[in-house]
Length: 191
Image (cartoon, rainbow, N blue to C red; front, side, top):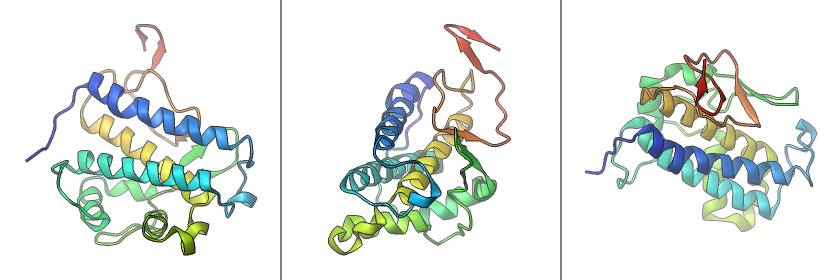
């Protein structure tokens, strides 16, 4: 069985910094596609790459948050049952997209033993991108990235890390009404 305990440093180095790289890659796409709800159906090969990478990382983070063996095969329905049991409020969490009026709820409507729209789109791309290329769109990439961000914040909190906030925050997302005990100011300064 491969259920792992992680330290704050290991989390930051192996998961949070990787999330920040994915976020940076997404932000680079905004040089070509404006971040606007009017463009939510825009799809591309770059979005395919990002979408598959983000959701692959989601699979890893789901296992950590749910406490599953990291080598075990799991489905989204396994994750939904466990995650909603432990963090039922996740379906109501709202995430502001900075510098826009866009508010996301990536887990809204999710029920135990069910998938969620953006995960279903990911599986369609993974198994037949020729006929499902339109699933690799701005909406699905943005929702899956915000879901990854939110799950990492939940994992951070679940691990009881101190300080309870990463040194480098997301430059794209902010969770509404998310309370932290300590906030990073600069260097070794936390308040």
